Length: 607
Image (cartoon, rainbow, N blue to C red):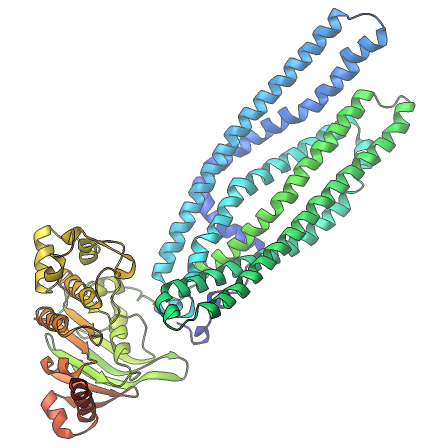
């Protein structure tokens, strides 16, 4: 990760793309489905021709059978009636033809749009899973969820309501202008003297709406982030009577979001009203110009009716574009935020020819490792130690001394600033990260369980037969509580594992490790909030997991370290002491003080 990217959030970490870059990004997802767009484009000229033929049929009817009938002053003439019926039938045929093609056009565009959005969502999800842990430390989960849900809905709406109207309306406008120019080029120019004003207003509202919809998307992201925090921390909210304070904070976020939406409505309604005014003005200008021409016999009544119809039809797509303009600008705002996410490149770099791990012996060596999460604030300082295959190393120390960071570096969630981490004598950065992690098992302090059954949470992505699944559960001592669940291994785990205890979640985590059968085992112990019986089960499970594996145990309770071959004592990011339990007690140094402190606390609790 670049040093200048530390602390930057998603909205700050990448420069704003221009419209061309946004369209290029969206087009990349459209290309696989371009055949649907091609078919749609081929339909548009046919639809436009059928629709713009209709006002011309009005002209033919008025200047033809109707004019001859009225001009003759005779009773109904069969020839005129038959001519009018033929034109009426032709008019109805164009209606049916255009409606049928519009249905097919809409279906094709919706199909293309849904497939494009599906591909974009999958691409975003895969991209999120590849990003470095540091990225997630800078960006709240609610903000990222907004990208993959709300922002993609903006793109979906663009394809279903925006793009169809935009492309079809552009064809309609072109067809109407061609038809009007063929009837009278001079009157067409008179009718559209207001066009420059329309163009200026469109550019003005384009800028305003784009900025407004960016603010709307950001406001929704803030609401999602705050909701995620409040709902996940509802126990703390109730415990500290924070509901009133939260209500005020959410009220401020909600009000800001409402104001952004009202501003978008203000611009949208203004644009709609102005287009209505301009369309009425264009018709008035045309009527004024045609009034002088009809007196001189330069224009027929049928031409005037057709022209008025064309002008009305011209401003219908203009008005629709104005109404859909907000959708288009919202889609561009969404595309902007999606582009930022897909442009995020905070990945752990891979070697040019990474080594795919087939088998590990489990030898680990830290060689003068220095690392930190923020520039100029190292968490580990020149740390060196080594483990032989099958050796057990316990790491102890005060909070913030760098214990858990060591485990994160072995998993290569981060890269070291200085020094090397060697596994089987090879620099960690030379391995293929995915294949390396298949040989590393870890139990975290806060065990994460996923939606699904108990069996699903043990197997994860492994294909375990039932007998193997039950065997690893027995070794992990998890079978003792699983057998008492309502549906055993098929019991559904509630959100965040709410229906089982913290200790039981850790036992499931041990079962996961045993199912994976890794050569290296990492354990970030967290047994402070479990009962003595569960702690005993965890100790028994730990014995099975440690067998014949190179193991690093971050010990919070020093009673755990007695099973370790060696103990490393961390202090302010440096190794302060190294040795076994008895040797470190004999030194009467930092480890002895930590041990004595916990011993006194335990005795105080017993009293």
